[in-house]
Image 1 (cartoon, one colour):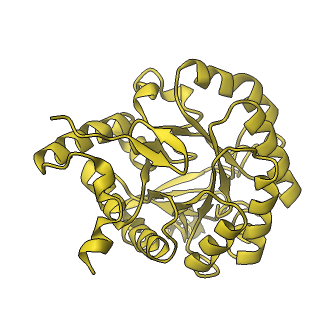
Image 2: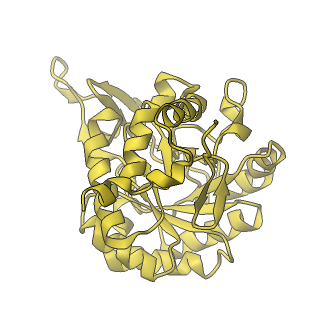
Length: 307
């Protein structure tokens, strides 16, 4: 019998727990020729800011032995272009959309979130932890009080939409930040963002990235991401979107048993553009092989087995 993959993510009903990690899947439409978007749990958009951003200077990507460094710098066309052109197109394709939001001030976060909510987003994800932008980014997510202030401002304009806060592990303890944003109205958290890193060309004696530093993602950070999901779930029982180095259905299930309700594929999309749909297929195979009737049985199961 085919296992049940439906999950309820803080009121957002997903046909399966597989979503895309922001910034690794464009705005979704770019992948529509190779991925049936409607087959995914949801598409998380590339992060949107109030005004268009050109991003950081190139080169913006560097490959590492176990992952990737990026310094895109939140390049995007601005909230109005996304609200008018991109969101309606995704809605026509029948896909759930989680809009990723960033700003340079708390007010900008609220303004962008309100516009995307009005344009039809199904949920919001606040990017409070991007390590490769000069303003915003880590500043907002590394302090519980500041993260809570951003969350509170967005909660006031988001209506009934679920609001997730994307956190990293830099700065204050991730459990303290997650607890603070939950108290401020967050529906759940996304864990984790990239980690700060650097790649260098020793022959030229200079960093490879145009921005000098970037965000490390991919299999190298998976143990750190699992650690964060484990700790936040144990302390808060918040709904969690887990991500960090997911390259297979088995990786996805590791996040789920640690406490993630949904999982996001990121760097793996660059290796295999069809990874997300293959994760859904893989979950069906693995769960059926293990006799698991419903994926929800496994959410946080490792905590229960660990006493």
